[in-house]
Length: 144
Length: 144
DNA sequence: CTGTATCCCAAATGATACTG
DNA sequence: CAGTATCATTTGGGATACAG
Image (tube, rainbow over all chains, first blue to last red; front, top):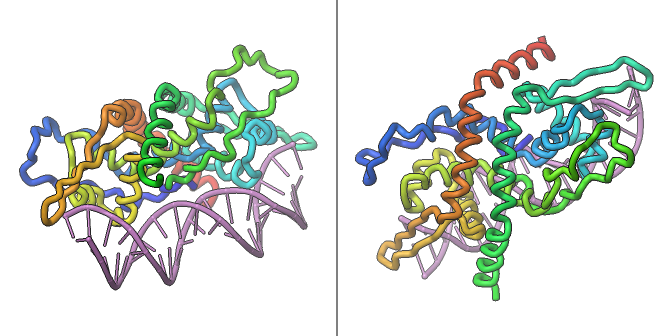
């Protein structure tokens, strides 16, 4: 779903024989590269992030989400929700009424993920001007 | 580059006429949706994340990065680095020697981004088993 | 209403070859 | 070494249409 939902290409780097810089610890960054990548993929997925955001303030129905997330297709919403459900981030509750009603809600795990995602979002907001400026500079420097 | 490097489809949700739940504030989550999305896209990009990780402990050369990030193609490394450079997250320094040498290094901005990304990575590591378990459960529940 | 199944096009990426 | 150019392939994702 995301760009990188598949766990290949996530090997560890060859150990830099003699590290030219201290490199204090065995570098926790590299640990568990494989597994982590597939989780980052979920976060990297635009729709997943939006859905998680939208579920912040309580459960929502399918079409409710569809309306809130402007531009998502039915197909992608279904796929995204399935992915989130599969990862245990969202629950899916069916009310066997007519017409049917399905509620989606964040799990505890999902709410936990929300925190770091939000932190990221806040960083993005805090620095968006700086980045926009950098982009402009770069662009006009490379095609005048 | 990432799945969602383009700023379309990032509109705000239509105001839920009469909200069925309190919906306390104008919801700061939705603010600056467009701009933020393109930044999240960068983070969502697998290769970008890896490159940022790899640059944690100092500048690296092109092929050095290529070797460290197992599986990335020359093409994708180039594109990824260009993107990071464009966003002002990485600097590119050319040493006009023969053969040429190019160093890539995180900017202050880039190092700043590293923090939230790392937080996310740590969350991922902390919960990877829980997620793996959820996936297994989901899978065997849906195709026995 | 909440999906699933198809078809189909555009974008992303890998492989390969070539260059300063 | 550090790219650029081109081609081939895969994949993502929108637009239907249909079903329970």
